[in-house]
Image 1 (tube, rainbow, N blue to C red):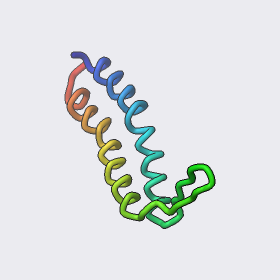
Image 2 (cartoon, rainbow, N blue to C red; image 1 turned 135 degrees about the vertical axis):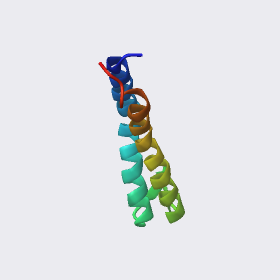
Image 3 (spheres, rainbow, N blue to C red; image 1 turned 90 degrees about the vertical axis):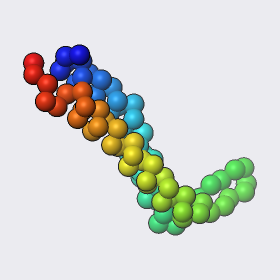
Amino acid sequence: MTKQTGTIITIVLAVLVACPSIFCCLFGIITAAGAGTATLGEQSSQIPQPVGFVLICVSLIGLLVPVVAWFLLVRGKTA
């Protein structure tokens, strides 16, 4: 595998994994702060704060995927 192929794979992973993880992290921060509500029809309920902390942790793992992919696929390879 060449350095260019590893870079392309890393960019695709960043778009497919890291971008949704950023939104998941933002939603987790909002929920952990106590501002998260779920509305279904006319019923509205508060989302528990531990759900926000779980979302933050899961999204941080998702943000690490492109970094690890870059480290394994691109770093240290010669052109």
